[in-house]
Length: 170
Image 1: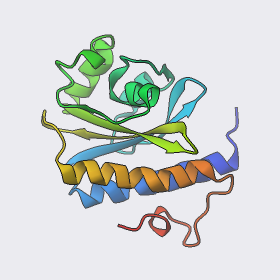
Image 2: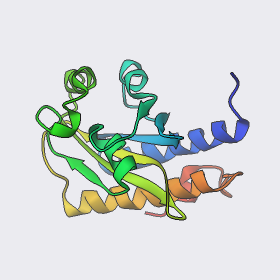
Image 3: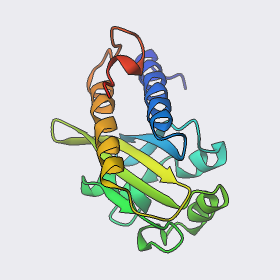
Image 4: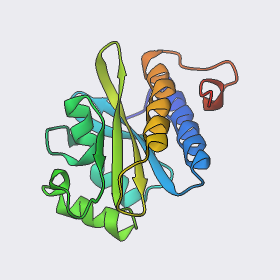
């Protein structure tokens, strides 16, 4: 099935946004943007995540105990998992948790991308050490959701500069 060109452009710009965010934190994090399609999360941008991990997560139904991103999308508020290996939100998905841990990802913080009161997806940051985010890291994640919401909210989401940097002012 062929994807719509606008979805391809959106995902390209989201990829740029993810790289900008990863660059701002010195590549100590791996960022991810998931799109909510119906009740399923689909990967839109996560260049730093292994393909096998993205495939395993792709299509997960959101819910009250579906890892960091599935729970954030379901609840409509940020979810900060400080240790993937012990957090109950990841307990129902041991294979996905194992894949994250084997890749060296220990914490996952996810913020829903919301526009017009509707959850459109999630912006997540994975950290290589188990820990909670600092206030500055929480602010950075929240800041990243704004341009992502713009990209989700516009049918023709092409900023003037034709890159995510054109809508991400940080």
